[in-house]
Image 1 (cartoon, helix red, strand yellow):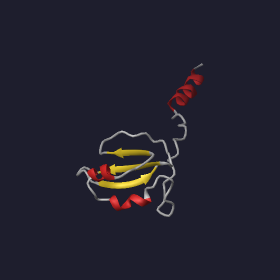
Image 2 (cartoon, helix red, strand yellow; image 1 turned 30 degrees about the vertical axis):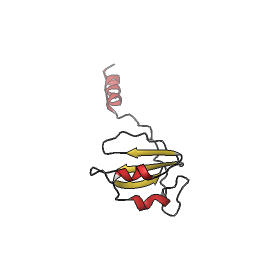
Image 3 (spheres, helix red, strand yellow; image 1 turned 90 degrees about the horizontal axis):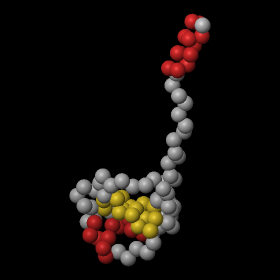
Image 4 (cartoon, one colour; image 1 turned 180 degrees about the vertical axis):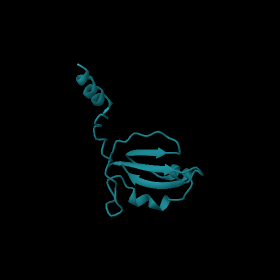
Length: 95
């Protein structure tokens, strides 16, 4: 009986296999402007966030500020505007 306990204890200490994590969404490349219109709005990079008020954007839009929680779902028809801490547009991309 003693010889059976040692393998059981060792098996209990073995690390569990972790399932693979989610795959990251595909990134929109500059060569592929996507369906959201991000390529046409790259001129807004560095502009104050108030510049978005003058833009007519039809469709899905997401404004992401520092420390905002966002979902990791990928929507090729959605345009994302990342705003930096100084309230300027830092990144524009589809997804």
